[in-house]
Figure 1 (cartoon, rainbow, N blue to C red):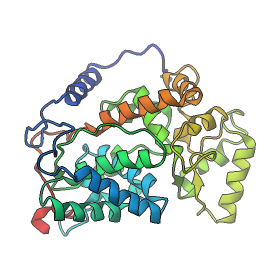
Figure 2 (figure 1 turned 180 degrees about the vertical axis):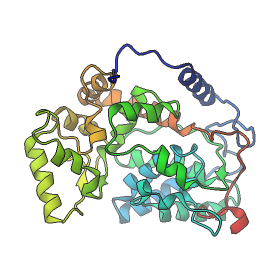
Figure 3 (figure 1 turned 30 degrees about the horizontal axis):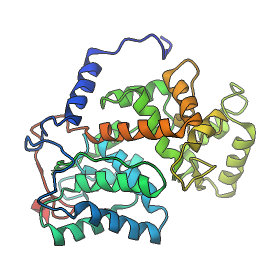
Length: 338
């Protein structure tokens, strides 16, 4: 049966998931300890938490411009694997493989930045601020530092005691995914097509590290379908990949790769999206395609939808409310191994 964007009926499971997330955003009990997520969670216990996080982020970003895009990507990869629980930060142990070692996470960076933030927080407020909340706040600051919007972050997450490399392999979107598969992956987390399109706009910064992530687009689709990719764009990327023997890096947004703006969507309209999963958003007759056009024309609408979607994604919880959790003293190890 062919995939169709229009005219579908949302499943009951999806509606329930969305309703649950909406309740969470309004102070739904936190499964980790049954506390509520609130912006003021650390106001009394660690009032300087957000300023400490921002200060360390600014210091690292000044030394390495790749810092902010890296932290934003870390947050996505954490939340899509059993919720925003900082499991992505855990190192492997004798009894547990690390999510860092899953192929989709092979090029993740910024772990040292989170460790640095946590070290300073431990000196100021010992055993108080979770690594999951550090990552959520650092991702917000990363976007703002790149020229994007800011927003209030709901806080109160706890850190998982374990990680799942199998879930990391299965639950993260693939750069070669079709639109239908992307929608399915996001729906699993209670995120809709508007969230998908807005959150994909994070690709307005950062780079793809390996030609294998987009070789299907610059090679296989040339001459097939005719209008899926700008021929000059494909030729440019092929030349770079061949010169670098497949190890080229390429910006997701070739217009303003170091600025958080709506240029990514302008690239999609011009058929110059780097990944298949990027260009698939601009599918005619789909809500995502309409949104790509809207965001390309109006950056303020994109910013508003992006902030809403980031809050929504940040409220993704572990699938089981009884999942053991804690406030880690060091983000790379559970307290029992520290």
